[in-house]
Image (cartoon, rainbow, N blue to C red; front, side):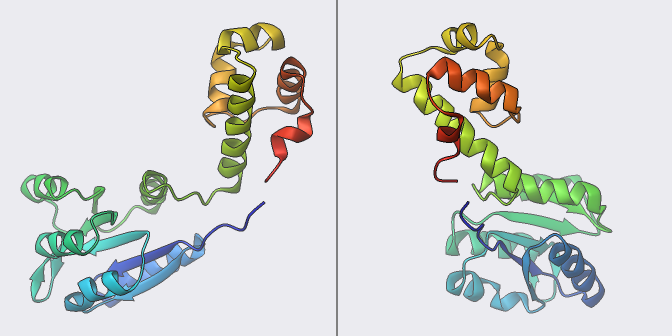
Length: 201
């Protein structure tokens, strides 16, 4: 298994307490965190370093968060940004979405839901950090590749393996973890070794 990349998150917020709480949470989740309390340096930092995700406070000294978001987008059009605000309004939420932020999160942050939002944002960016997800994706891609190489449809493979079309489709798309029993049936149906599914992991 290849080592997973370090996921770098930039937090732009001028509040010491908020920065401390967010940093502790994110580092506890295994992310590498950079805190920036001088928003005027944000564009320079994004140009200089690669960040997988930016958490941006909406109200900042000297610059509006929406304006800074636009500047960050110009610096890196692929940048994934989540807006944080203690003063949510419908107007600012709509503007945030128009500016292509990934999400709009109210402070104080509810960390169980925040964890899911961050994971969704990273999945959108194509960043895999969950080992089980990475393994499931690799196995699913291998099964799909072997099935196509043997010119079998999902229905045909399902018939051969005595598994449902839905289950095989979910395994190929990494939406479901395959049991050893299912992998054995699929391997037998494809006339390959189970070990072939784990090559290059």
